[in-house]
Image (cartoon, rainbow, N blue to C red; front, side, top):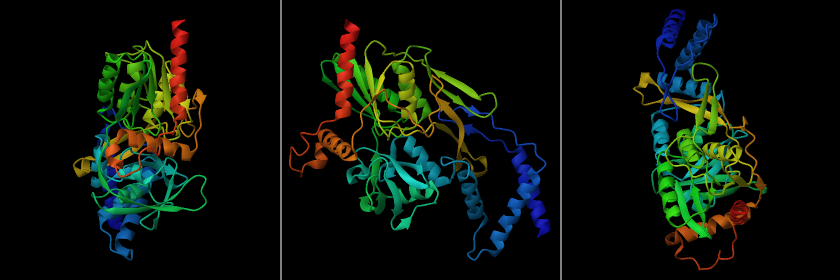
Length: 427
């Protein structure tokens, strides 16, 4: 046994010393991997890992092959770093790529970890989860009767995804409610348009909502803005409420449309290396800087949404209206693993991002300039009215007029603000 441990340890140490790693960030750029720590303990620690691996392989009550053991170790190692780092097996890696292209199959929800429990960041509009009434902040305590407390986030994601037509039962605990509630959801194929609702609200004030930041988002937004400009838009409300984020590159492409060239959008700071600190500044061809603007945010606005909101707020380009955002200010890089033919990967936190004024908002969120809080019940009614207005085919069997009197107070406040700014700027 000692000889086997020694040989495997030497092999592992050799592989870790010479195997290159190619880190692919959200911008699809290569980064230079860190060198292994030059520590005299490295060999001994790898020897410990090898010894445990062999004991599990030989003695564990249920037979496990090496792949299962190693993948479990990888999940544990990365999961201990932070709640966003993880090992992506072939299925998870494929699902991640599908998600960034705005197409996947499941219930239609974005989740993160809060207090060791999978928590809804935001349901995706016009999906089974959205229609079932899941809300930002809901804690998913059980999935199909299995408790989620203390389990890796990937377990919840795997259980929630699945083929179209299959049922899943989630048990949630909602803020302000003492008892959990069970919700039955039928999975479906999810296609997510990332730009929705573009229209003129009145007197030249445009409105556009971004539901997530995927690869097509900036181009879709440009088409919406072009159309609004032809309709005489002279002010804009950009709605980022319950937008869980997405690709960093997409957020930068969106933010730069509303800033002057070379204005700072976001700074990412890593640990060390030639790209330790990277400033992202506005570029591109289209810059809409001549009309007043408000941005709507709430507790479900996270990650890439906060990059855009923070950039526009710090550059004094827009006024933020609504509620304090979620507070995810870290950057994850996806690193395909060469040993599996790039079919698997790790997702690892490589940097934190800072708004133009230097704010690090992870765990804190961005506070709006004009706070407008609404209750969960009020927000549910706003979502219900919006869904029926934009997708009437899904609600043909309902009595008309049920939500006619619902007022979106956050949106109304943002519109009033843009109107006031137009008058002020004109004078």
